[in-house]
Length: 318
Image 1 (cartoon, rainbow, N blue to C red):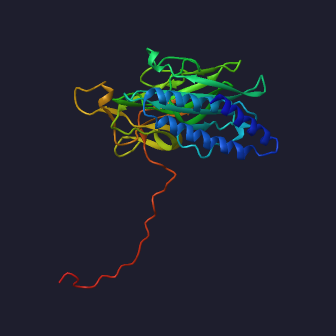
Image 2: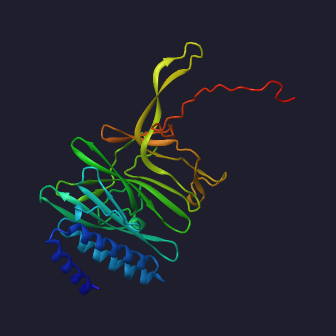
Image 3: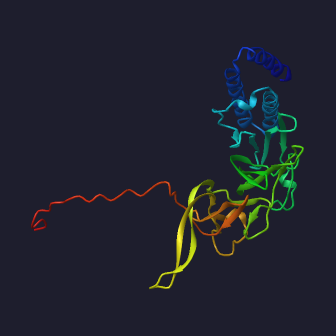
């Protein structure tokens, strides 16, 4: 496999000099999709992991090439590629599902290093099964709470960038997970996973984890929604507080509840409520927890009622 990869890369590099980078990165993208399918469809765990090594080795060599960061990876379907809004970071993540329904996550960070004036590649090693307190754990690329990321939200606090990551983890036979993690970088460029930037959340956490029944579907997304803020005034008739509805971009999700009484805390029996009713809003470079939000999209206005004249016949029901 190594000889084949080297030959492919030699041909790739030769053709790149003729200004055909996108064409050949597209070729490698298609090749990677095939290798991922080979791993996914392998008949046993050993074969899955061996074919995953082929995929990972080729991806690593491709990402080390000049101009690879500029490629948009537009047709990937069986591994995730997300790019930060400042165009300084790309994250590649995927998993290997084993026969016992456990999974192992894999990934690479491709990030611009200002000191070295180049993009640096960091492999990610999933150590989540060795982490005793994942909600408060702060690690790095060698000690990563693995997930497949599908969104990056950039916020800044005192000139420090935090990349908030929304991810999915297939976890095990009984439960799935969604995660809100935080990625930042030391001055030397070393990645850090986890940060205590969640305010007014019920627990002090460095990442937010949602674990729920394998049979359920849990929504975690970043979009424009709305929440209520007290105006400090009261209705003169009812004396009830008057609230103002504020639209804003936020991380929004459902509250998890047990399927039945007595099942509190058993993740295999936790399911989301039917409405998006909790979230985080960015506030001074941190995430402020909102226990009551309105899970609808204020960008979509209700259709206006148009009055039409209607002529009814007399004695219609006679």
